[in-house]
Length: 282
Ligand SMILES: N[C@@H](CCC(=O)N[C@@H](CS)C(=O)NCC(=O)O)C(=O)O
Image (cartoon, rainbow, N blue to C red; front, side):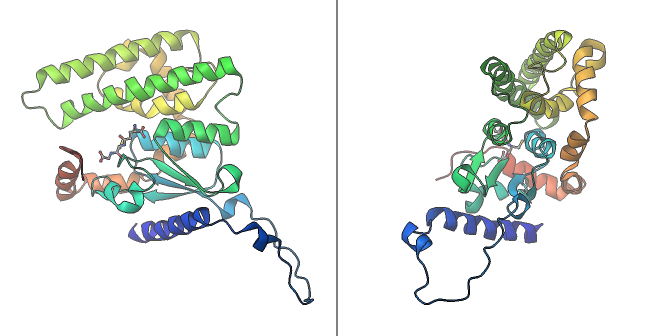
């Protein structure tokens, strides 16, 4: 894992160097003064030569992007960011994700063929959707529908389920009010989703980045509420999406890393110290 990270960090440095110093045009155009035997031009690099780097840990926010990359069959390499060990605070990572949160990506073949980094899972999904033309329609009405449900996830379902999980699993003592507030809010949101899915197969009509954004969070919310009994349309949607081969692969990415950490009480203790009680760092 450390090796993969070091290699990715080297790649990132190279990528930045290339981005910072484009070859001057005059140099690109210059011709050798003396006649030399012309070499055949190098073949154009295939997309697999320049995979997207996915900075990732297996959580609902990370799965959104591994699922989208799998759905689009985009070549990528996963760079583990062990958030339980504080790797999200490493300067190399903060340079691409200043909020010290994963996921983030570096696409060496960004706009104009130059590298670009993107943080925030919603922005990454939109970027990949625009790049590939998949799961993010161009038609304005269809796009607005996707964005409504994408932002609904980013501002509602994700944060509320995250808070509910915190108070259910990590801060039980004396927090009845907070626990009820967030668990209720997740219940309300599942109700909104259930109504929508009673009339539509997917949140925005067709399967889209909005569904990919919500799916992992519904997996988490399913541990809080009996969705089979109360929200049958959400359950049917969850189960159907879960059977998609790309979703299975994206969901499985890095699972062993997390299981390893969960099985180690010392690592869990360290993760709590790193993840909870964060304040601004100078
Ligand atoms: N709004 C961000 C949230 C990302 C986020 O909260 N990631 C968590 C894991 S799910 C993380 O990196 N936590 C590290 C930390 O708390 O220091 C996004 O959607 O990308």
